[in-house]
Image 1 (cartoon, rainbow, N blue to C red):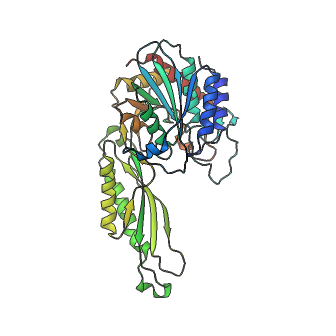
Image 2 (tube, one colour):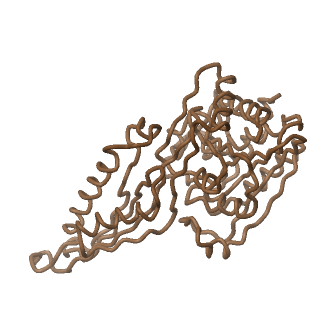
Image 3 (cartoon, helix red, strand yellow):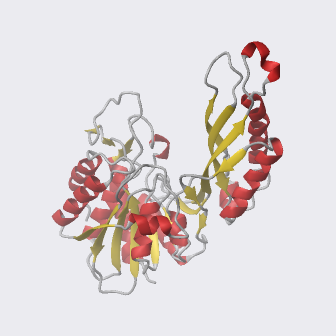
Length: 390
């Protein structure tokens, strides 16, 4: 039995705690307190950052941090199997536009605040689902992680610590679709050199901006090629399965000087099933052909792709559970964004994502989620746990 008022209270309390990527400890401590209040066993632990950064499979990171914390909450079971619910508590900054509602405020049946939909609200829904279990099914563990927004270091650390799971459900906001495929996303940074000169004698210089323009066009053409014949059926259904974006440009130091340096930053896709090294090499070749003088590097988050066969019994179980709870059909889907799912599937753990509507409000001003959707999600998670058999 899910108590909607208690779930609302706890979700509001967690959303009210700031947890921008790089500074998540307070939110995890609050989540541990909420778990204890529900009679669940919580384990708050610090990961070894130095060891993680030295690991050959290190997934990268972008936010500054001096510590990395994780939390597991366990609902013991007497049956067979071990099931994970993975959710991140880190959030992106608020932005520069004022919000109408304070973080953690409930107005007209919606919970407002950064992380309400992506995905603190879902983490609390999973927490309440664990508390509602009878204990005669599998052991169910809520794996609450940090650092998802900048590469997944938190989930990577959690799996280094404990990967003994038979399946995993990640309640990211999917509109109650069951996501079985996620594209990867690789952060890149490029430098285009030029030759400085006075603007009055610009022909004696070489503008880094002029040299960059063919790079921009070539990257756009590369995106078109990646999306021209998409093989994966779930990804093919998307309007733009594999987006490639240059999101930042920085050039020049003086308005009357020919710019001798341009820096560009962006995000390149990894197709489902594609090797990360191959995706990088393809972008590097495009840039080199367009501008041989340019250099490219790959800092920050490096999201591989991830996939679980839609025919897998666990994917079918999640779909049945949502269908029963919603009273309507539920689709299998693919998504064009990176997520922690790929870290779980890389371990051979069947993993799908399924959660509330509202991803279009994540990272936006006045981010919010419907309370009714969180309750529906919690009930569906209970169905998944009760129906799970390894």
